[in-house]
Image 1 (cartoon, rainbow, N blue to C red):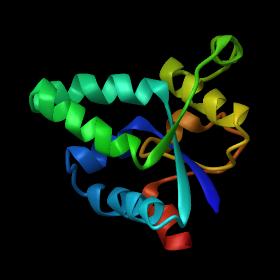
Image 2: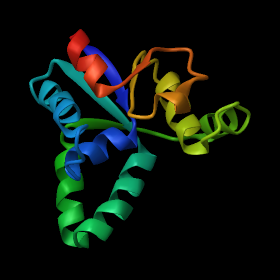
Image 3: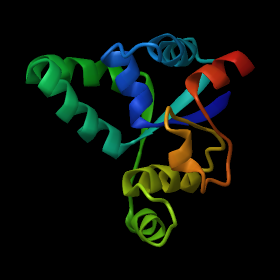
Image 4: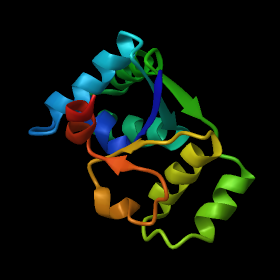
Length: 136
């Protein structure tokens, strides 16, 4: 089973139905639901998504959405080493550095994001949801 790390923006594409990204991002979750891929996310994703969804919906609805999300993903920890690596990295976006090193620390070999330029420092494949789906 392919292990993929998905960036927060991919999750938001699905739950906020952001076009034109929604279709391919949603297909990732369909693949996970059918056990064809295993999705990993950062603990940061849950905090960030909760914050954004409570602005779009209410707190109760945001929690329901996060509960559905948790059923489909594995949440990776952020530890001291992850933060140290992120702080010492050349990533411009600190959050992306944390997510990247969370994935690397768990030996995940693919990152899926909408923001490819943010991961130009990555030493593993980084692709959009559309690229991943078309490759599968």
